[in-house]
Length: 410
Image (cartoon, rainbow, N blue to C red; front, top):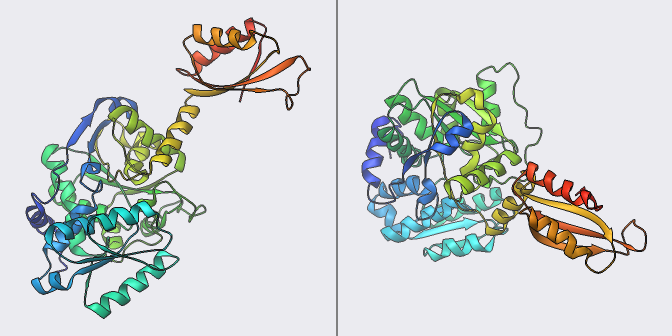
């Protein structure tokens, strides 16, 4: 297989995979544009069947197999979107697939991959040990390895996203792309820079996994090189939680990417909720990284036309619920109040009436007597309220205290 990667290669990949996956929309977001003070356009790769852009590279790689390679089958190591993309397109194309996953992989991901007919092998207590086992199986059985990012055909497949974005909005000023191993931004930058040399390519990493950003800043002699002081911690953006960028991708990133920025976990959380609230779309942490970067670094993008890739939507429902609850609390739309009231009939009803008259809603309520630092004939009422924001909260507290009900937040 050729290792050439250029615009022609990516255009050929686009023709090859046409009709093999979803032609995802690339749409303007009026509300996010107002918030970010730039024109935001969203590429909805979370609308792919397996909810990830990974299908593009997987489909392109599989369609370049020889008949003999396809008959022997392919193998990959992944605990997430790459596994599902490879398994799904192997099922469609009738190619035997083996996916090696670390033993700690959540059962739902194992089940989703098996659902596409792949042979799932659980091996190793780390991704590195799973990868070693995968390479051994590939050599033993003559299977073709489908790498998640360090493969020209994979990179070319991912680069087709940039072709579609520029075909819709030809005068984009900037593309902001999540970076893990670097396959997505390498392909997109190769295509975009060839079609529109003035376009700015910005890579985004979670600050717990900043290897590519550190390497890029070191290569470009940044006056204040990044350090990975928080490297290796847990992250919502597990899709880009890669300890080392690819051997093929990093030189492309160094050559074609104009900046690399980091985002924090709280910024990723906020971006997930923005997309849920405003665009009514569900993304995983990596899928929200681009928006998180634009909102965290507004001056860099002000007044520009910015394309973002919502690269994946595979987020655990419980995790999403936790994010929603946390972000509602941070934005003062979900608050906890403690009210000290006389321990007598009607006190709780009076508190509820005051709150209700101001249009707030009581989500939870509990009484504390034994553990309350109050006189015996008083009770501490702990409330969780759904409200409209900080001003609304202040009106509720003022009204309660006007009725001789001592109130504190938290």
